[in-house]
Length: 630
Image (cartoon, rainbow, N blue to C red; front, top):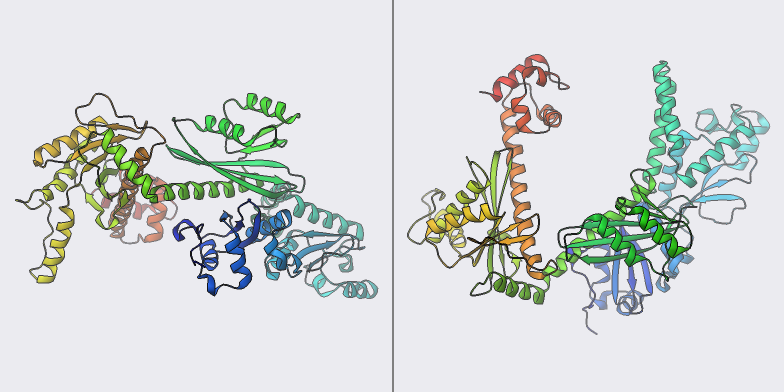
């Protein structure tokens, strides 16, 4: 038996975030559902040498034909989603989990005279309302601790409660103010039941109405100078918000929605559909869209609806989208005709649905990244892309070595440029280069400068104008010569980020260098057009072609590399300048940059404007103003 599983994903494709994974067989049936705090670390255990796996695990992974995952925000969310899917799909290899009653719940004994909150692993308490399951016992206790700050209901056991009621002396929790149960004498049984109902209602619905009411009470108490009451309301609001943050994948029990998230670039889009029924995620569906045209998000949403729904898959009453399309009313009418009832489209902006939309969006980002990574690593696709680029640009041979250049600056300051190298369609990060540009009139001048400097290395009779000066030691000379040798590799294709002006500047640098045998082009981001020197019309590559995908990836990598260098340089530049001023430490530097938003705005600010910044006095402001202009 071979140790290699054909469906094993590459390690770099698996995220390191919390999530839930599913193994499927050839028919699509889910064989196993599991959760992980770190998906990459957990899944790697299943793809160890088969002889080292437990017999049951080995049988599961060899029966499966694929694995997929859904990322979530926390380990608690992963447990909740795992539990829901195990109950939903009944996977055969999850028997031990289903039979194991070790997962704790938070229960409220509504059938009791004075209901109490408790941690339990038993699901058969008569009249009790359950919340969970939770991954660990401490997670339940943490939730109870938070909730008791807002709803101080009874937590003592029945024996202590009866003893306290008979003796008239409060139980220990009542004595220290953590419980307002009837034994404390502070509330009646009826009032306590009201608090319990509020507790259950909040845990079941996660409605923020109560938080808003408590927030207003806090503000009113503060205005009335009743600071103890204000502090108590503040703690209650914090506690309830903390509980809400733990339940991003669980909605109210009566929520039935389909929730869509989209992540896209110029050539492709990833769609994630979360199917929520009874407040629980019952299923996840995802698909990729190759964009033939430069479609808007509104048009993409229309396409999503048509793909997701038909007479076999009817829409629910409510569909949550990242934004409403332009033809939302017409789309609602079409969906209503399809479903035979009213269907509402909603754009989630805040609340529990917006939180779940963030989770779905993270999965869409992961799916798009995975799609692009797998497409780039496909040898056949890369070979086809290089051949198509050769034909489109009328090159004598395929561009086995390509270099792409991009310029980055901030309002004309801290100008930098990047050079990235792709060989055989794959990045050669050890040959990436960064350029600092002291002065430049515009982007075209910057392109001309960096290409002049780079092409100088391709002339064997001269050294680069900005060659590095080293000590006269054998080791240093060998290292620099090795670096220059890499820089002297001649590319087949030079790509610049931009249109006709940038290509013209690059052509001038190429002509002045005297280097021949290099093709030149530019890619304009707006319409993804390829511009050649002395051409009045661009080369238009098919939007779903591997050739355009490869050129776009090179351009995006050059942009990322330039932006990263520019930000690091800008941060070091302003930090070093401001760090020279006495009394201005890192914390105040951060506050200054946050207040003005950019270095350029700080430099033109007056001393009075700088003095308005929190923590910056008049004297220090005058020192900063003078130093920046010295």
